[in-house]
Every structure is written in C-alpha cells, then in structure tokens.
Length: 216
Image (tube, rainbow, N blue to C red; front, top):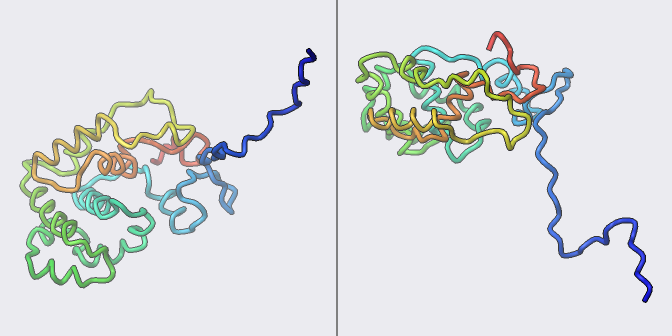
C-alpha cells in the first residue's frame, strides 16, 4: 500500500485554540528610547517610568504616600491612581503623617464625597490607620521598609514578562512585619509593587534605557 505523501506544512486544526503571542517586554517611544512596555505610549505614564519608577524612594512622607497609593491601586490600573495623585495629595495633606493620623469619622465622610480620589471607605480608613501605625513605630517607617530590601545584585535582569514575580520572599516578610504593626492593605503583592516602584529592587526589563541606571 502506498504511503500518503506528507504535506509540506501541518494542516490547520480548526478546533485548536489560537496561540496568543507573548506580551512584548519593551516599547519604543517617539523619542527613540526603549522602555518597559507597561508604560505604553501615554506621556504621563512614560514620565513616571523615566523619572520615578525604580528610583530609590526614602523619607517617611514619601514612603507613606507610596504605601497609601499602592493600597488604593489594588484592583485598579496604576495610571488611574497616577492621574488622581494630585487629588490624593490634597485630600491627605500631602501625606503628612501627623495630619492624616488626626483625621476622624467626619474626615472619612468628607473624603467619601471627594471625586478627586478613589472613594473606597475601607482604603480611606486604612490610610488613616496606617498613619497612626507609622507614628507608633519606634523608628522610621522608611528605614523599616528599606530593611527588607533584598540583596539581589546577582539576580538576572528580567527579559520577559514571565521573569517578573508578583511576590517574593522579601515582599512576604515586609507584609508580615507591617501587618504585625497594625498596617492594613499591605499584602505581599502590594508590597512587591512598592519594592519595584520605590527602587528596593530594579525590575526594568533588559534593554530598557533605565535598566541599571546609576541614578536609579
């Protein structure tokens, strides 16, 4: 019996699930610079990527703001929070710890009516509670957070989205410590996002113009 000729290429299977191409790690902007693709082509998002994300963030006010905004971001896109950041800064007195810690139920009601922020009662109350928890620390909130920065100088730089973690042992440890001290909305995923954006780790993709930036 003759053997059927082998086709030059596989016959498409109409029932097969289409293969989704991998998400690109980099995007090239109008200025010719390669950036991490999560910032897309939005100018405001690109500025945040270029000037803030991954640069070491220190100081209690700055770290408290970042913890607060990362908490509000949970379940939303970061660009949504970024565009409302001026409103958050106004609503929470530039994230001054003592001022926020003094806020009461009347302030919660006021903030729930503020369209310039994300009006989530639990997150508003958590922000106030976190300010009180920060003031109760024996030392600096910034120093506490940075004490959990991993020593990962030999860690390979991410090349694809599959190389990016959503949590790490360090973010779990930081989350546990903050929760033990009374902080809320500080889960390990949120804390890893804090570590990435606040420069405790450098997760700029290989080929991004900011990767390994000495100024970062």
